Image 1 (tube, rainbow, N blue to C red):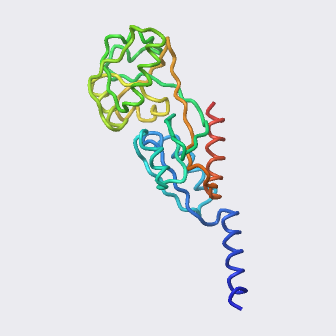
Image 2: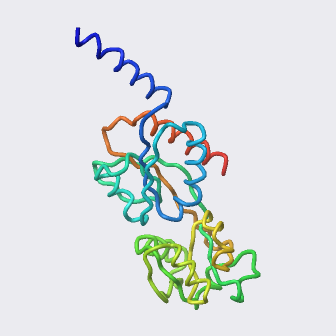
Image 3: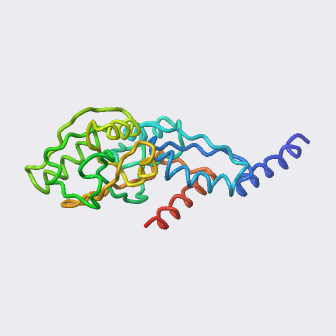
Length: 228
């Protein structure tokens, strides 16, 4: 008789997962992305599936892949990073990179600026990997272009705060514009070259996504298409 008593509960649990009436969504994303673009998608997910628990890890961009690798999050969302053999990445979107300056900086009233105009500026760096990527792109475009570091920090919000008080400029993904009023900074388009950053969804290789994770991936892709 014991097996018969268990079967209804097993079937009910499977049905609840299929209809997303239970479960847990575990996501990791870089701090600034987590509290802007990803937060908006999480809000949509929560409204559609209020009974699914949410666990969000906000980290540095350089940590996203390792957090997924260790199983601390089922999904990672973040900029392009090396994954190794145990983590897979699938393209999600590319995001324009803007130069950010203090509202009092001479560039603040410009709608766009070329990298040559920034040759003598000092920069606030918040990711050594991203800085190397930028330097590589600039050198490929013009070997005379480089970025002089004024200060290096851990989090993008700290970088924006330092830009706001005039310490230097920063190269920041477009979604960070939400915080421009908080730090009294301006986001300006970059030209010659224009730079876009590719963002990916990360997961452990060989693991089937849970129903909440599958539903969230669909929402991420829908939001990315809507944002162009």
